[in-house]
Length: 442
Image (cartoon, rainbow, N blue to C red; front, side):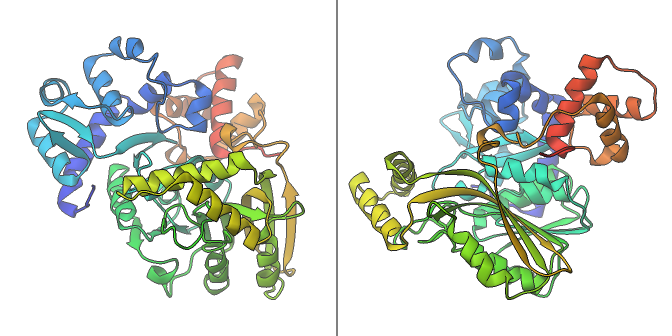
């Protein structure tokens, strides 16, 4: 388990240099289909056909993928001969990133995720450390960052620190808060890994408690997503019995901290007409002038056996990972009783945007479920023309672009009118930037 200390800074930077030398971001892209890079960029899941491709790579490249993307166990000597020095291995073991057992090395349930020009250490979803996992909701929120302007930023429930680290490229003051201590330790490590530790802070605490007295232009949050009875103490995935456990205090805090914008992504319960969140917003916002809420429903469905079984699988797996047993039947029974208690029969995927307005409080629900699938994130975007791509490029400074070095070179050449790209090349770059920057929405 990672425990960060300032003494590890040079070690983490040495790891960064190795990732850069191995072109780690490009390697992971090469091992995935383009769709999968944006849909689920962190992990390579299909091991059945990848060995032949890996074996054709230079040995350091192969090993860095096996270790940090595929989470495989590799012999100590092979790593020493091709990738890390003995001293660096010892330091990474002391940091908690690597484990050494029987002359073999593996990560302690961590992977390194390349995304939008950053490297993020993240957990692979174990019960112990699921709070530092990067899910598809976080990837979507990351693309939303580049649609907003802000000088100060709060990432509530920051996990491994993805949103805060990306925001630190643009904001002068960035803070991440998480209730899980391991997530905070991983986030601090990631801040160093991405060389933004001088302008981002991470705190362990409950909701706004660590940031009392501080104000922020923007607050983003990816809240826990599964409505569970109180007996299931799974902080990183449980959103309380009604699914509003974190949303209610999160929204309450907006009126104390007065951000210009807030963007929250969550799953919720409700009936066929609307999610429970709508009533919460009405109770909170209609009594508070100055905020406008847009509630985008990107998915909606019946609470059927398939939905219940997916929740059961997560609960049972989490309990077993921490050494406790529980039967599927028991969880099914309690989940059904919980849904009956709140008289809900539908689930919702929700993107909530709240903006400070001067013309009074408004709430608008927008159903985009027939146009959007989070698994295809971020498919809310449309294709853009070459001319629009150039306009987007020219508005951004190269240092703020979340793209790889090769694409930065193309960007600079286009900006300085030094090259004229073929239409296919320009469209390829334009589509990537459009996905990342959100140049045009529906």
